[in-house]
Image 1 (spheres, rainbow, N blue to C red):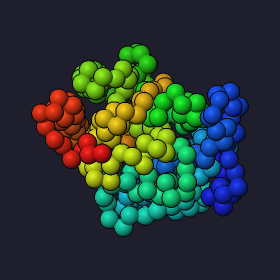
Image 2: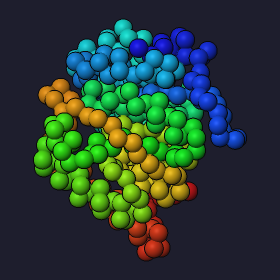
Image 3: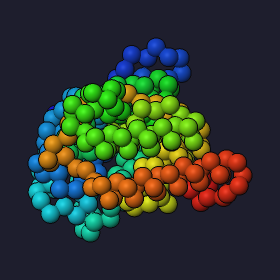
Length: 268
């Protein structure tokens, strides 16, 4: 399991420094936007490779189970929203706190044990080397792998259509725009105006469009996922709303680039 917050101030990750001018040591902080994650939190934390992060920050968004108590027992840094703010609002609190800890890399992973936390060091190393500024975990290396992992067929089809649209409109070539595993270079979190973004699920799509607009380099790595009853997932109706909202966000980006629209999302 990862080091406790009391040890975090004196611990740093070390990587072989082959790239000239690239710091060999970085402070890596994992953040977990949590809601009713009591059944899966410990398994998620246990999968994080020892020494790969210097602090784990969990923001509880008004859970009604034992998420907060378990997080504290695990030695995590815990922030509690007394009232549910939503997925985007939860991430805002996570990133604000992570930046206050002088993190060089911030890794966001859902505490529902859906994403494989063992790849955290891989994502951090790609950022350290300057290859990318934002790393997403792609759940869809192959169609068979995604479906065998339990992804519903309708969700797979919707993901493929929406991700293709976003790649074309944003000029990217990512495998999965809608992953719950993401890693950010500190500078991306400092420059992108994510504080003004949605408090709900649209936050993620807004952030990625903003990252492209501000010319940060996006990339992805394959991340095995698990679909099971305790893993969080939004229903079909909310997924449809999310998809239509994402289309509008990406359309705003393209209109802004063509100087046909001015959106507050893309202020500098």
